[in-house]
Length: 401
Image (cartoon, rainbow, N blue to C red):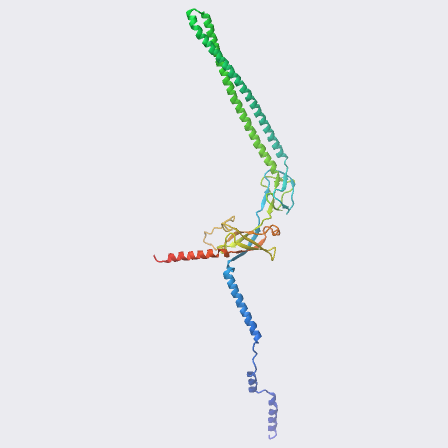
């Protein structure tokens, strides 16, 4: 018993140094130094925070004074007023003078149609013109002859009038002489017979003159008829010449050939689509939301970005605004007077002119997608004035009567 106690105590005493004291451990934890942020890190954080605040403030100021006036849309496309080339006459295509995608100038021949039928029609009309001209000349010659005949008839009538007056004077002179017996009654009878014959001659000459004059009217009518026939033939010749000219189809504008469908030997009729000439002068058709066009006006500047040319910007300006939304001009306009109406933001087509030369826009192709941004800041005063007038009007309505 006596020997066991000291050994136990000794073992306990020897094991205690290896176990940490609870009080000592807690004291060490409480007295351990805390890690503090360095002044450099605090400076960087404060600088970043200040920079963020400055960026936010700058963005707010930019938006208030400029950004909210920039209206953009990606619902925009490159457009060109393409010209469809078609035939005005019927016939077989004799020559196709252009190739696909070829650049052409205004007035350049594109297609030739077999012109032999129209040449024959023009020649026939020209022959009718010559025939009508010959008929007119013949009628004029007959009219000149008739004028001479009239002059002759007038002279003969004048001679017959003189003979009749002379015969009447002789009868008047011999009548008292025959009554007194100075002259025989046979002489007076002869003179009276001569007087009657002279009067008959006068009547005949006058009738011949009237007939000659009536003949003049007939010949004048023939001249007018020949002239009318000549005018008709000339009109037919002009029509044949026009059709003959239509057998050679020319480009109406400068541009490039697209959608060429015509082939040599093809039979074409009026209205047959042959090809399309796409002008080299392009514009942009941008479809803005109805909430974006409130202060959009003609002439406002625009920036155009073409998807096919990344990193390249083109300048332009608003050329015109459509008088209606796209839905109004669709084939089947919407009928919203129904019970299941759902409001949809409408879009208004805006035409934007590209302020660039054809050389700068040579990579443009009709139908390309673009992004358009219009600066409407020039109309901000107009919007402010409208709001002020609206406020004054509302205040006037609310005032008690």
